[in-house]
Length: 383
Image 1 (tube, rainbow, N blue to C red):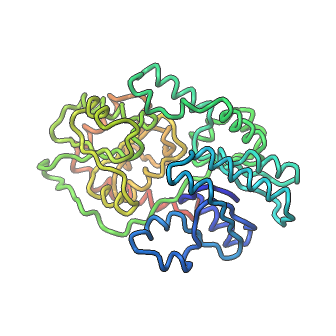
Image 2 (image 1 turned 180 degrees about the horizontal axis):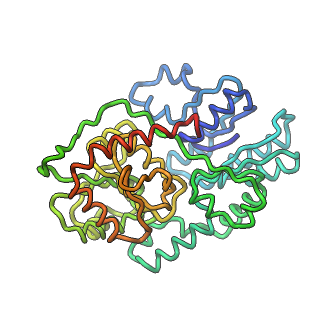
Image 3 (image 1 turned 180 degrees about the vertical axis):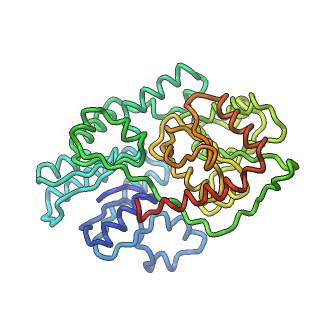
């Protein structure tokens, strides 16, 4: 198995393979062994960040290939080069070493050379596709350039080179099994691929949020604004322009928009699009959950995702959702119970649902309970 940077779903796959003694080797770039000497002795201020690169492996091996990623982290190089470099390293290891493994498990953009080497050795190729297939993504994003040209600089995916897209195509062609995190991703695959490959849909697990909500809404009072949270990269791929348009349509003093995420344009650009919103910069995961617990409703009208894990994080904190099926969590929605599913590119529908929440404060306590129950039913063990 290989992945350059690791994340929650990578760790879940890794833990399951290792627990059942199916893991031979995990290849990554920069990392630590969870609970190891270095992690125990490093300054406390660094431990939270280090935990994102810590791996707990009991039976298998872990191999670090750090140089390219270390250069990127200090500003030299890009993530595509990191993915390609690790992919080439793993392929070389497969070709030069005798391994007992009979399969490889790789992720989009980091699988091509490994799959080529694995095919030559007769190994099964598992392909984890964390976002909609590129043909679907490119179509939706290019349509958005025509619809909202001012937001084009935020649509980073439109700049993928033909070489990169060709790599994605060949990766999929070489895969025996395709792992999809949502119905949207599975349905984005070409029909011929779905007919000829085993496609597995596996929805992510939700975080465990032990602390009680620090913000409660008095169901009989409208004395505080309804706090609507958008969290994620500040791009129109995630529908932020439509959220801004919805807030203009609403024009209500009893609704407050909170935007937390990484700007991909100067903040002045966003303020010109919507003058009044509360901006919150990115922060460690525990602090993200704390912010969610100070909000009331979560909105994510994405055009292209895989399965935005932030939806389940928000639900675990008791926030009902206003989301599109393209955010990859249509199965999370019990209409009017855990939130509302809306079409893409529909600011008027976003405004309509936010207004519903503002006008039905008495429904929020029951919806908070319903969203939390729904969230905890999605476990990493199930995934």
